[in-house]
Length: 85
Image (tube, rainbow, N blue to C red; front, top):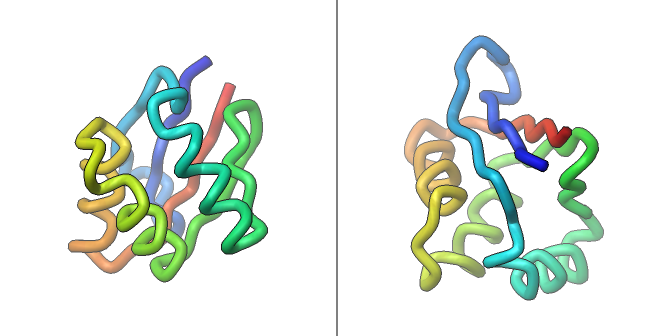
């Protein structure tokens, strides 16, 4: 079960791939409670810049691949399309 991350506007801009979100499970539950957005490992999720910044803030103390992807999106000022399988 992997998740691929793309630029929300330009899907040809591949941002990265992660194999599991288990390492940030608690932070994702907190993120969902604050935003109502569920990041589904098996579906499609759209995140806009404000949501990306919040999620990054929640996980920045746990350096991992997803934090690098989020940081790239913040620096580039783009939204993210997440596709799970």
